[in-house]
Length: 266
Image (tube, rainbow, N blue to C red):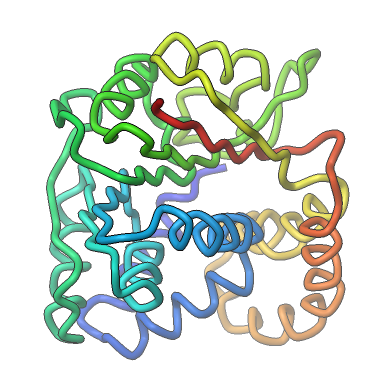
């Protein structure tokens, strides 16, 4: 499955329309379970870090996490980094039009980042599965953190005996995901020695993903006319998907198609 054509349509719809982008951010927060996991962790981590914080959003995409942090945490300065100039241009226009002054933009290839002890928190949400040379990036992120800094990431997860996973649905990925052991081993090799992880998108979360992402995007590949009936479709399936996401967030998933990791630089 290729997400990029759908992403391009969404970019055009929200480009230069601050109200549309804010509405889009709200929709992402309601439709994507990973956003709920990440925002819950940010609500726990940022107050505990305390003081004036420098946060790197490594691969900000549409910019929803950078905007969320800027709006919710006045003690944080966000550096939103992306490799795609069009994403930087669009998000830059948005923060300028909305008067957000705690976000700076940076065009950055994470494999070439040479920051030293600069960040209190580095955020990476569904980015690493797109990068072939992940070990270089993990090392760069470790060096970019201050002592006591935290790397918070989310990425597709594979069972130890899996031959494929949720990532196989997405054609833009260079890997289907990571097994828990593989990801922990790579983070330790990069220098992290205190690591905690949570499996996301368990049985309940995977159902929500199929209802809210996989099926709609699969149908959109067949015909863009489906955009016209998307509101009715979501109205019908959302109650079940919302229940499933809440169950996933409350549960301790023994298996999951996603993995969220917190890793400290000590």
